[in-house]
Image (cartoon, rainbow, N blue to C red; front, side, top):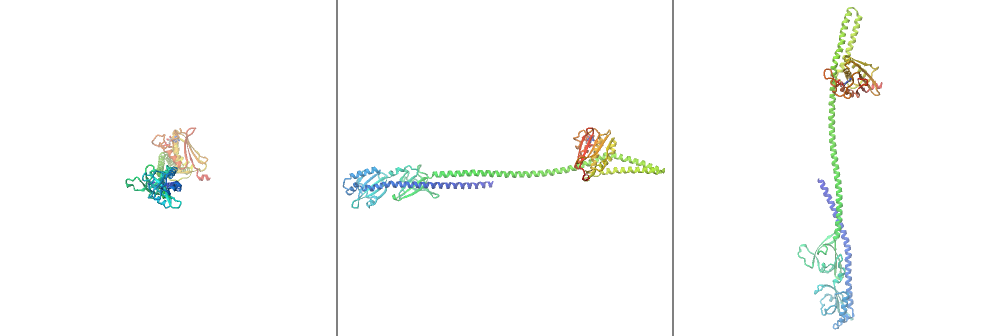
Amino acid sequence: MIRRMLAFCIFLAIAGGVTGGVWWRSLNDALARLEERGRADLALAGDRLLGQLQRYREMTVLIADHPDVLRLALDPAADPGAADRLLRRTADMTRSDELHLADQSGRILASSGRVHGADLGAAPYFHRAMQGALGFHHEIDPATGRRLFVYAAPVFSPTGPVAGVLVTRVETEAVEVIWRGEPMIVFFTDSDGIAFVSNRDELVLVRLELLPEHEGEVPSDLLRREVRQIGRHEIWDVDGGPYLPARALHLTRPLPVIEMTGEALVNIAPAERQALLQALLVAAACVVVGTALYALWERRRALAIRLATEAESNARLESRVRERTRELSEANEQLHRAQADLVRAGKLSALGQMSAGISHELNQPLTAIQSYAENAGLFLDRDQPERASENLARINDLARRMGRIIKNLRAFARQESEAMSDVDLGQVVAATLELSEARLRAAGVEVDWTPPAGPVWVRGGEVRLQQVLMNLLANAADAMQGGGAVTIRIARTAERVRLTVADTGPGIAEPDRVFDPFYSTKEVGASEGMGLGLSISYGIVQSFGGAIVGRNRPEGGAEFAIELDPARKAQAA
Ligand code: ADP
């Protein structure tokens, strides 16, 4: 949040700086252009004023040389009629206000008006003319309040001295009228700072004074103004009513010929508008750029947040996967333990089932051994040693057979911890048949088994394979209580070794389910099953990397097939 505020403040500062800079630059440029044009206009206005006054000046000098004028000046008592007419006509033609001819004392001898006898002796321009120079003055007529330019030219007598003075008075309006209404405000101020000539009435005879705001009531001949600088430009804030610009560029041009200063006020509102417009454009551009940058920034931030969230959820997911994996492997271990327990349980149950048959199997040779021993004793008593040794040999055979049975039983009952090894499948079948013989015989089942010519090596565990096969034989015996036949075959397929156990029983009721744990069609109790035999067998065969399948044969009866990997020993052979 703080970073965002900081970035926003920095952006505001930069945008403000740029906008301000553009405004300042644009205003200065516009003012420079205004000043250039204003100076040209002011020079033109000054030249025009001087040009017009020049006409009156030349006219004054010319009329002073006129014979009618000279005559009257030389003889003031003469009839002024001719001079009066001349002066009147000239005044009419040149739109001068008044023309007078004064004698050496300043008394008016002839005039375009009716002011004969008036005295000009005190006027400064009269003195100048009397000294032989051209007098020039500006004044306000005390009687009418009109503003006048006055030229006074000496009337020289043929002998040299000044005989009189010709005075021309020109009303300023005569020169003002042609440049009134021009857009630029021009005024000409005298040495007192009073605007004597102007193209705006508001400025006529007014002094533009630097007055503080709180000065109170402003006299009518004063205009309040304040001065400030924009760059190198002098700007006046004028308090001059609706017809004067509130803010104007002030320009001056000295006019020493008429002892005045030409001044101009150029409205700077257009320059200000232009600068403001440009600044606003730049500000708008800044806002657009800023918004774009902000949007970009926000997107990057959102992306970063999304990535962080994804990374976090990934990490969570991974840890959950790890957890689940651990749970699964624990469950798997438990399952393996449970399976091992079940194998053990299955074995015990098989042992239980077998015990009856085995005791019978051992009892029978024992009884035979007993009678053979008795007989042998009798034959010895009868001194028939050949018969006695025959019986002893039989006893020997039976004892070996009992030993084999016991050996197999011991091997079966032994805790299964043997690793995978190479096992002769023919041997496994022979050993299992020996253990199961009694049971099969009791059920009246015949066994069709031809041992293979040589060993058939497969990968597996001898005892566990025996367990599987014994289970298949027990199931076959169960299925054929009324008698039947079991066919055991070993065959080699392309890559594996196949052991099949087929019977002539009623077949499997639900072939899809026989390998399910606790699936049994047998009644629970006594020697009958728990539905675990085939599922345990399935697990055992799978642990060897082999497969077991059960199906019903088309000709009747069930067939179970076990496929195992051949041992490398066999492959090498
Ligand atoms: P159990 O023998 O304890 O019932 P098994 O897993 O060994 O358990 O057998 C499951 C079931 O498969 C048996 O109950 C039986 O229905 C069927 N079965 C197994 N072998 C055969 C067979 N040779 N003929 C017919 N049914 C069989």
